Length: 495
Image 1 (tube, one colour):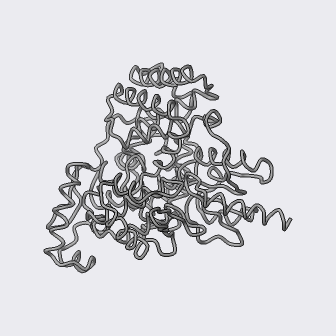
Image 2 (cartoon, one colour):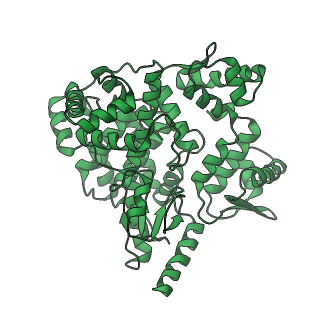
Image 3 (tube, one colour):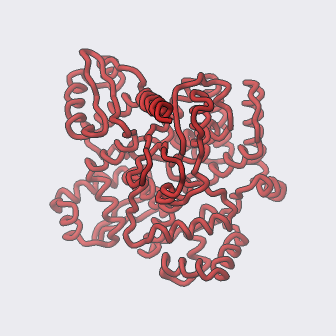
């Protein structure tokens, strides 16, 4: 999708990404060579980055022939995502059309401060990429997003997820608290484990689905488990509060068709959320049995090849199976600016190169056997699921690194939070008590009710009351370590 952006802007994004992935100083000549550009352009781009993107977030320091990106205190990579979107009118154009379906040329030009000629030129450029890579396009007269509906919803949810902070609710027509409550209850019906990060992603997907439904666009679903839909429908009808929430959120009578449209990913026949349910399904359904056995054999092969035990193999099989079936229903299986799990995967690859490459090849073969599209983004998403959800895998490869915390939350998922907790414990031992809250809250405002005075997060939180926020990156950086270590020392001295 970055093909639609100017070459100079893409070059600046690549420079930022390159420096973020490097823990130490980077030689300018080496960076220029790797990015296929000149040292002169690199120096000019860094001047522009420091002037236009970096202020109050980070600074790229130039020391003769070397560069290093240093974050300001309590700033992280996700802050850069938000800043980059301020400089991309192409994404704003798509988002504006999504929120204003069938708008007129005059209204769109006025909203975006563009001439009609410039607007049409940008749409032509966008459509060349959107049609080839995402199977949808921007139609004109009137302006609307048309094509593969699953891809449209996935793209918009991904765009909104990268553009807005976790504290920002970009759907003015939908009450976030009511949406959170509705999703929480629905997940319980589907027997999905509660996780703050999962709820945030589902809120985006369902809110996007509601808006598209209201605009008259629907998903043509297949392989739907009628029992799941019936169970959810019966629950909504029998619970007055849920019926009221439905009426507010959807502004339409409860119907099987609308439930299937909104919950098409969770209502798939092949998707279950408990180990026992997956085993029972594998016994009854040959296709699920084949998937189960392929994943099981993949894990057994990795475990045997590298002599690493799997503490809960059935749970890991379940998690990989769900990720395989969700594919395009999963936010972060694709990306616009920075791939959410890429820094973490790069770190894991460096820590366990032989295991990583063996797992990558085995995973690619398994996805292909399941008749799925082995594109690079989806493969990395599946690898992330394997490597992060394999509990305690890191103990066989990682050297202890510096880190800290008291109250821990992640917007990736609870398994990422657990892995971060283990890494932190390795360094600080029992000096700090670490408590995860991914599975205990639904909204960020609930953090204010927790007793701990310190919150450690991998995403910005601005409305904390009487609490100290420590912001870290998905893969902890030296600057995170330094700040955390200083904080631990201050806590110890004041105790």
